[in-house]
Length: 173
Image (cartoon, rainbow, N blue to C red; front, side, top):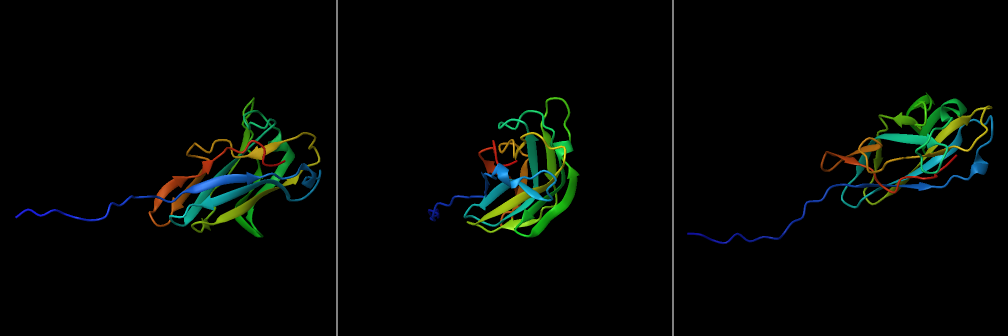
């Protein structure tokens, strides 16, 4: 005897992580200053579930498109990522000099930050501003459509997710 199966339609959804930036006024950076805020990133988890951020890659350039060379590798040092007063990951000595016309980068791995579902967290990227600093440097995340810039894990689904949003064209420095 055949019978109809009945039930409700279900839609599978996954956790999400949206990335935004708050502008950091240039007046906050002082030559020879220790731990000035050079970028402020806002991470927002969607309403499906908590998200654990694993790594974040920042880019520094001399233009607002973040796609041109910079001198960040020689002008910013002791780079740290903070959530409030808590340092995330390890201190990076300098931005990696990409050479030529490529942008400099710094990647924080082992971030281990959980963003609760439906909530936002603000992170500050801080650096020592060295005496040789004499130019404008833009710092942000270059490609939020790529899979290497912000990597996270959905804690309910245990799947890898990537930060999405509008690339930061001028979030600091």
